[in-house]
Length: 124
Image (cartoon, rainbow, N blue to C red; front, side):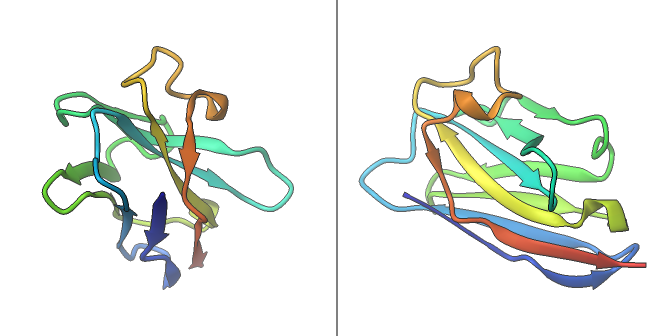
């Protein structure tokens, strides 16, 4: 089970760190990802990280502004977002792929488990 947190209301240019805490006896070996969904839009890939943390991937829209990481000991993944923009406003979801990093990591249907989402609102 995944629990996302850390969202909030911020101003453009601010930073946030989202957390995704996993419960259960293991935290891997599976890939983790963040997606976001704005009202009226489809769920959109943001970032993904492999079990080892050695491979990370980002959507073009957040490259250079976001960093995904994971702490296996704490069973937690993070998404650090800098220089937030109004267009980053969305509900952010974390997701786990129990089979490891898939070549289809950008697709929501690849993932086996989802957190409940955390709202990020960026005002201009």
